[in-house]
Image (cartoon, rainbow, N blue to C red):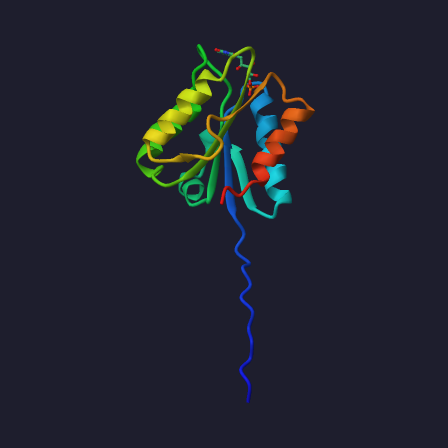
Length: 153
Ligand SMILES: Cc1cc2nc3c(=O)[nH]c(=O)nc-3n(C[C@H](O)[C@H](O)[C@H](O)COP(=O)(O)O)c2cc1C
């Protein structure tokens, strides 16, 4: 009797979680395009406002996407700042991608955020972050979709 060959099938899909903050919908539009890209690539993906996050589920994901518009003088807003403070001890080894919209900024809030995440032990997979001006145009949405589709292996 010959041995039965049972092929190994990797059916585990990559788990992704998108947590965003947005006042007027621009960063939310980026988050939704990331969601679409992730879905199209076959990932298991969830999306929510960071203030409504299921923190344990978010930190159990393979890739965490965090979005926030430029606030203050190119600073990260309260929602993401509070989230960072709450989970700062749990970022070690996490893959994190960051994104956000601004009016006229140069990405200072994203660079500062990247550095903070790195200091907390995370790997910022799209260093120093994906930025767009105002509402994302077609090209920006395409970049967001590609970011969502990337597995960062
Ligand atoms: C209180 C406040 C502070 C802001 N500070 C900045 C800033 O420092 N630099 C900048 O480029 N845009 C700044 N903006 C503009 C927003 O970042 C921009 O309109 C962004 O597209 C809003 O994204 P959202 O629709 O996701 O909220 C600020 C907006 C508000 C309401």
